[in-house]
Every structure is written in C-alpha cells, then in structure tokens.
Image 1: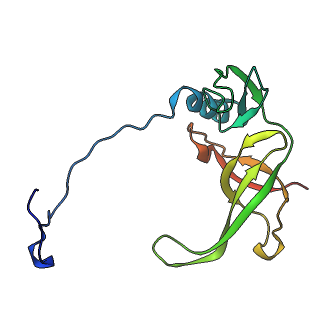
Image 2: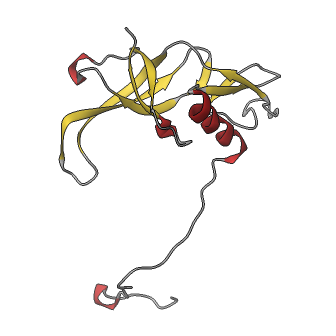
Length: 154
C-alpha cells in the first residue's frame, strides 16, 4: 500500500478473518524454568559464575559480565511484594468482584522477579514487603500459570 490516504473514507478494510499461525518458545533457559515448575513445583534461577548474581526469570547470559549462566539454583524462602496494584475492572472493562491483586514478587539476593496474582488477602490489608509463597496448580502444564497464585506467608 503505497498510496497516501487523504480522507478516512479512503481507508481500506479487510473484512473477515486473517488466518495466522505462530509458535512461541520460551528459549533454553525459559524451558528449564518452566519444566522445574511443572515437574518439581520449584522456582529456579540461574547464577553467574563470575559475579555470582542470581536471575529470575533465568537468562542464558549475565547482563553485567556477559558470562554464560549454567548453574541452576533453587529459589527458596518467601518472596516479597516489591510493588502491587489492585484491579477493579477486567480487560473488557467489566467490574471484578472481588478485585484482583497483581504484584511484582522479588527474593533477597535475586535480580528480577515475577509478576503474579496475590490471593488470600483483602486488598485493604496489602502492604509493600509482604512475605508471600507460591501456590502451585494440581494439574501443571509447563507454564508460568503452574503457579496458580501467591499467598501471604503465615
């Protein structure tokens, strides 16, 4: 389409469906991360052999040293809510009842973190720094949603 549109009435529209096909892969590091979630219900990270930084989600290379990260480490202990938001409407702008809490969860000594849903707490009781733990699905499929949600640590 090389012609210049002068008026909105001149816009061309494709009516109907356009068949598309795609394949998304998680990559080498992502695949191992997702496999650990599915098969062992564990959150895994990778550690740089040079600077010893730990990354979640895992990466093939340390972004600081550019070293290949080949040592996998289990991320244990509670995660902590770095920041969060309370969603009152869904993607179709419909009210959510109850509202959903979505948070960035980080771990001490770990670079990065995971964005996930927090449940089992009232939105009015949410605080930054809240210790949380993952709740895994009973029928894992090899996806980040194998972590059903995070909940406050008792």
